[in-house]
Image 1 (cartoon, rainbow, N blue to C red):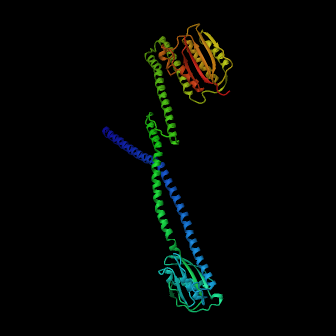
Image 2 (cartoon, helix red, strand yellow):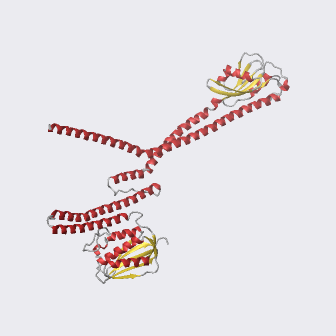
Length: 520
């Protein structure tokens, strides 16, 4: 029974593990896909945006070019047609054959001679509808309009008053103008037979005699053929240019976004715990500046993490000792021995007080990074020194002195500065003997206020002078205290925008805070 239960439990565990592994694999695959999509989005967006803008710009240019050229073609067709009509009117009104000098005798003669003496432009055909029903033309002999009944019907529809005609024949668009010629020169030319010139072609519509008409017809489709060919070439060139621009933009986007890609990779390596990676920055553009800013941020993070790591190591080390003492005495205490219980109780209370003091000092260091750690106000430095000295006299029997400065005012937190001065005084008392001097003083150097506490004690050994302001670094080789006092003083000075230094003096030690005066 137990074996079956164990087997079932094992199977359930294996199934659960398999399900969890599968779910994890799917989530990783989804994250990888999402990451790939996100990683490519910026580059694709830039490339697609440039491609779309290029296509739009080239399309607009093509449309403008086509519209302008189409208007030019239509303008040329209209001008040519207007010119032919004007020449025909002048020719009919003059009524004299320029070749023979004789006057025309009929409408058909006017139409025939004009047609014989004029050559139409490209894609243009001139027609003469004679009074006897014949139709003469000058132009392309293979034009579909020459054989179109629809064309003749369109001309007949406006032959009385004249006007424009438009029609489509075999897929080609045509437009023209009909000018009626109803009488000869002087308005009394009789209708009669006439023959066309040698260069004119003719068709016989088989209609009855009637008024004559002069017709100019343009093949609009044919006149746009060259423009159509040009636009086809333009489209090919534009597409090639758009592809070239897109390719170049892809390369440039990849090159420009390379620092961003490197930034992403560096950020990923940081998430894995590596803070030593840095971005290679080149140039002076915004992306290079972003890389330098990111590197500065990494420097601060690395320093902060290193400080935090050392801080936690030191705190763990300092707390381990009192906890070990507490545990050891509780284990060895004889609960039946009243004296042993009292002795152990006294010792445990002392260690508890030490731990409470350590925690309080650590909290001060932790709060020193907060913006509300100091509350700036106008502080009168001589008054601050006198007040701090009066409080420090209770720390021990020493020769307390003060080097009263002239009137100095700085912007700072009076309570925090008093706390720092009293901590310096406490350190001085610890390292001096009775009746040795401890001096408070201050002076102004440039825009900074220097405030110090100097003693005539044993001083700070050279081997620990460089690290005396570090956490848990004690100012003497005897190892009194937790080694957090000077760290708190440095935190207070830095919170005011200043610093604290250890001066080398002939006897004892001098700790000096350098604080900006601030706005007055």
